Amino acid sequence: MRTITFLILLVINNGLFAQLEIPRYEADDTIIIHRGYTLSYNSKYKQANWVAYLLTKDKTVKRFQRGEFFAPDPLIPGTDFKVDYLKSGYDRGHLAPAADMGYSMETMVQSFFYSNMSPQLPRFNRGAWKKLEMQVRNWAVEYDSLYVVTGPIFDSVMPTIGPHRVAVPKAYYKVLLQKRNGEWFGIGFVLPNASLKGDIMQYATSIDKVEALTGIDFFWKLEK
Image (cartoon, rainbow, N blue to C red; front, side):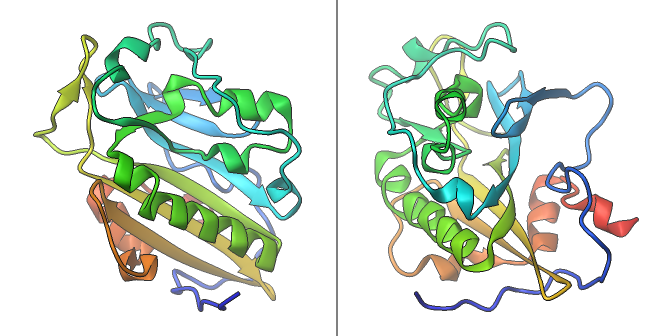
């Protein structure tokens, strides 16, 4: 596998922090904790602001196969969006990938909650987005573990699908943090919700840039 040098976000020599993957959030935000990932739910746009989890090398070993488990999130009322996606022309795109959650049946099933879905164009979901997800798993195997945060980039003008008016983001982000030899390294990605060609590394950017686009403070516990 080709080795990628991570863009440096910051370098410190502190130990690991508990739940380092969780972005900064407000007291009135809807934070949902599932076994495999944590999410911040956006009731206006009918999807997560972010999903976050620690992906380890061991978790990349798929023990349970993907199935059609799409279902409302039992912890969030009003998240049955089956009719919204039906014949919409958009895939139910995972934010926390099912392939990252195949280490247990519980985590696999939870990855199919509609709170973890976002409307993605088929060529995007099955193309560049899938390639990026695969690359993240490769890095988790190579470096033993990665902190992962993924989500949509919202703007003031977005199309919607279905009677619940599920917002269709124009782009998505993914930010990664990894500790190697006692130092922290990070990288961000911003991908348009479109049919994309070429190497996914052309969509790499700094985590600071993703923070500017989303207004989200990632890995803020490292600042302590």
